[in-house]
Each structure stands twice: as C-alpha cells, then as structure tokens.
Image (tube, rainbow, N blue to C red; front, side, top):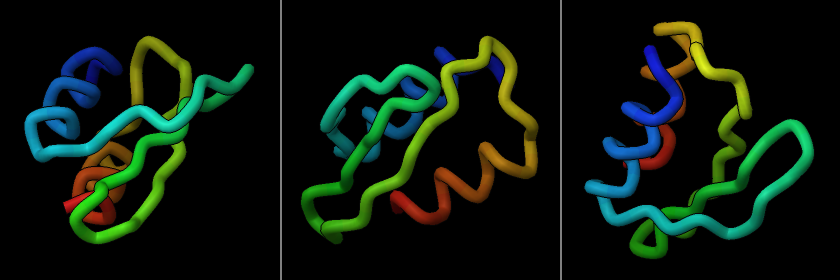
Length: 57
C-alpha cells in the first residue's frame, strides 16, 4: 500500500499527527487514545498497513 493512501485512511478515521520522526511518524486516535508509528517508506507492506489501521480504529 502506498504511504499516502494509508495516511488518508487513518486521517479520515479521525487520527491526528503527533510528531514527525526520522524513520517513523507518530499518529494518535484521540477517541481511543491509541498511538501507532507509521514508517516513512513510500510502500508499506499490506499486512503492516492492515495492522496499523486496526490498531488506530
């Protein structure tokens, strides 16, 4: 999955960018309080992308 598509999905779910890192960006879902790092690669493995979406939902 493209990184920009993953970012669109989690932003549409109400998540917010907490901070930029050198290798990862940190996103948080304010309604659940869960945080998840997103790798800064152009392509993210489908399995990892599904895991990130599930954790932030």
